[in-house]
Image (tube, rainbow, N blue to C red):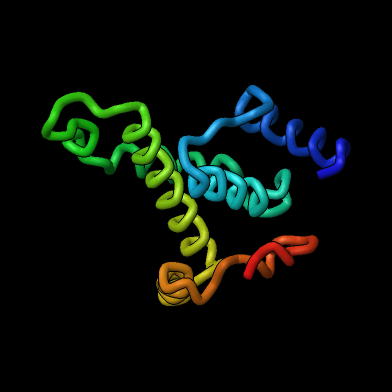
Length: 132
């Protein structure tokens, strides 16, 4: 990544989050965040407030018991996992409601990733010779 690309990415994080560098407990959380930012595309993709409202709805729709495991208080990692599951749910809702993808297409793609048929390599620029 060039310094210019990093500066652009830091600026997007600053605009959206109020700070430059997000941290994630798991790689899938970083991918979920990055996908949302790329789809937002600095206002050219979808209305950020529409995504935020769906995220608020996903948080509100989560049963309180989800945050309280049987063995006591949730760990920070568990709370972050729940949050990014809500994040993904909000993005899925937005993409379906905005007719970017149908529920059937979404299910089919998720199944392809789960089965290892898709890896998203088609979206990654550069040499991937280190894979397989």
